[in-house]
Length: 275
Image (cartoon, rainbow, N blue to C red; front, side):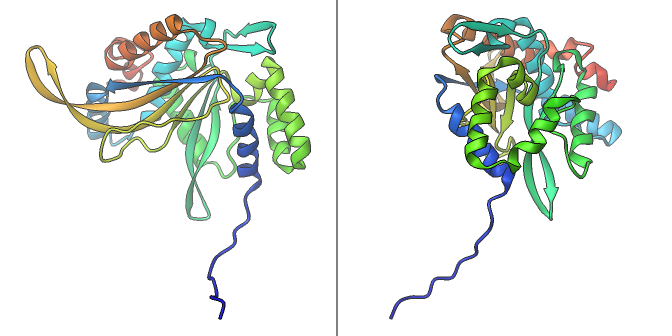
């Protein structure tokens, strides 16, 4: 007698199908990955102190976007650069950071893509409030920008798959359209607060994207003493057709310094929270 199988069938959402289209195309890029641990002890203590004093919980993602965008601005070429086929590089002045925010849909928390435009000009306070506002609205726009790009994104999931593939090819072939749809760089996470340090290997449509893993504790030697520090596992995914090892190393070093130390003295970072 044949065994009866019990299962539940759920329809794949149009948005999920769209993400699959972008991911499939992104796999064609010459991606390489670099892994590092960022000491976020001081940053987390500062945010915790702010919460205790004001009751406000500031987005840690906003902090990462804030620092990340400022370093990207410093390394606009080749980091904030999009290649047009095999002939030209488009280096943009605006640093538009695509990220994923968590929204509750029908009682279920789901990640939604959102682009913070001109993130390199915004303070931590401004980015935090923008992300919180995007999380609260019923239907989140995929970016803070207005215009044709928003209309294309809204229409895209409703198109037949073969047409979507042609649209994706068009987007990836035109740097200006690509920037309008998905920004210039990315910050994505899989859950930053796990039980131990963790990393992610992600596929990205961007020239450079930071994948945020989990935060864990590690023993480090500081000023001759062994101390426990909170370390963030981070992965930088890069298009090797645009970014070589030397520029990648310099970007990585500047990003580490900014997250660990430099941001604490900047008016656009923690000081914008009035700490």
